[in-house]
Structures are given as C-alpha cells and as structure tokens.
Length: 156
Image (cartoon, rainbow, N blue to C red; front, top):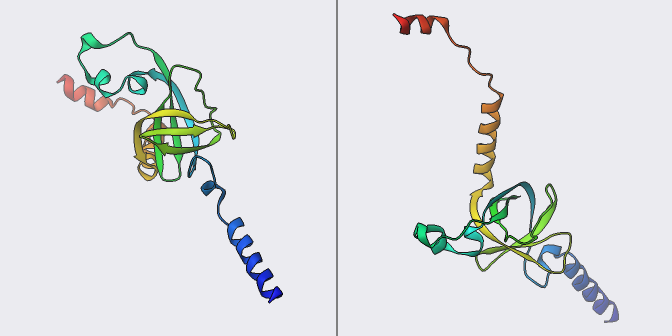
C-alpha cells in the first residue's frame, strides 16, 4: 500500500511538471513571437478609437506619432500600435504576448506588468511568408535594359 501511494504521488508530480510553462501564468496563456520591424506611425487607432480614425476631418486632432511593430508568431503576424508613451519593444527579441479585450498584451524580459497595444493588422504567417518571398524575389531581379529595337519601332 505504501509503495502504491508513492507511485501515484510520483505520477502526479510528473504530470504537473510536464505541463508547458506557457499555460502557467497569472494572466493566462502566453504565445511567443519575434518583433521584426518598428516604425513610427499615426496614433489614431491606438487611443482615439474607430470613430476618430474614420470621422469627419474637422473632428480630428493634431497627429501624434506612436511606435508600430510587426510581431511574427508561429501562425499569425500582427501589426500593433503602442501609445505615445515609452512603450518600446526591442527588435529581434522573443517576447511573450496574449490577446486580451481586443488588444495585445505584451510582456518583455519577464516584466511583472504588461504593455497594451492596439492591433492594426493581422495576417496568417503562411501568407506573410509568401508576400516576403515575393518582395525578396522582386528585389533580386536586375532592372531591364532598354531594348533598342523597341525604341526604333515606336519612333517610326
């Protein structure tokens, strides 16, 4: 009986330890992604909302700039916009993030707090990879030389 209890207890401990770390967190399930691009863009979608972005031109305020990041995960690529404060994410770092109330909550370097970002765009990773390949292919094609016979034909 004592041996049986020890074996069950050992099995329970083994099962708990085999649960991935992404599942165990105070805020929920985190995904992992890499920030591959940053640019400064319009803050309209970040903190003024839909109506301000698409409302009448008279209602618009002076434009502020906010950081805009491209975050690549296993299945989805996100373009996210931060607030004009100091919400900076280092490039090429793997970060933890989760979807929360139509925003993306990000934790950088095991920080105790999360930074909230508005989602500007989402695209499937497979489609994003195809677009990136197409861009790379187009940039690697040398420019076409002007064909002299074509110029003579047009001149006649």
